Image (cartoon, rainbow, N blue to C red; front, side, top):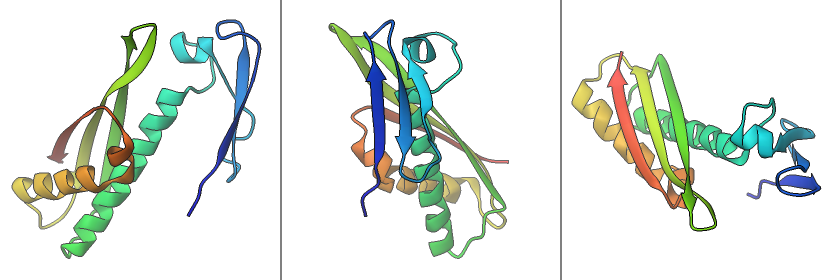
Length: 140
């Protein structure tokens, strides 16, 4: 399986701007720029997209892990907070903090934490990130 996205950029790093488009069409000329990345202008940025990918990948991996354990979650809600830190002349993604809240009947906190930990380690996005990953998993 291969998934594709395309970035087109015009201008300099600070004053320029670009658009992101994905093959699925979910991103279709979605704007990104210095201001959407480092300020508050409307648009997206690479770190936000990585956070969305990590949250989505991990949550789906967890759903499969719970299913394999014979459990049926009512709801799994994950937020991924990606940290961008200075690194020499540039930047690096140093951390992805996953915050999970789940409603899973017939599951105790210890087993939930164990299954969630396995999902985090086996999620393909977790495997590709060269960053510290933390997980705060709680049943609600």
